[in-house]
Length: 171
Image: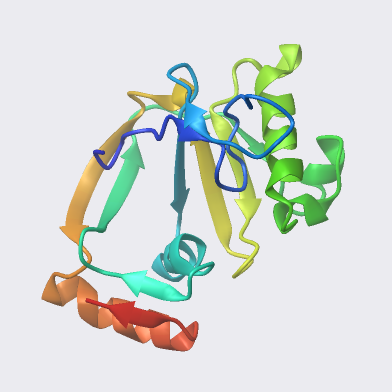
């Protein structure tokens, strides 16, 4: 997948808005719904991407710096934003993915929110800002930089960040 590509298989992660097949957790390809997760800080990206497993897999993974080409309309779930959006701030850290995914689908499908491109929310792991972009944002991003995580310039900083987060780096 490219740096600006949207993952169409889900739901898997926190704010995936992919449609479910039934009441049980399952994933599937949903060609009409895609998601792209991003963060403003590398430490937040590392924690969000690798925190659940505890292992940062450098080989085969990439780091990209993206910039919007056009403005993005995001539902802010920071501070009192979650309350204004009908829920509580704890939804951003809820470990029950079914709950957070149900909320993502609710906002995505809400008739008054059809022009949203995604969400901005505090990371459950670092409290830093994260963005979940829906496929509606396709074509609105450009790649500024794109590196493999095992490149020496990136790997050094990655090891420092992983150590601070108590994560292991696997090369």
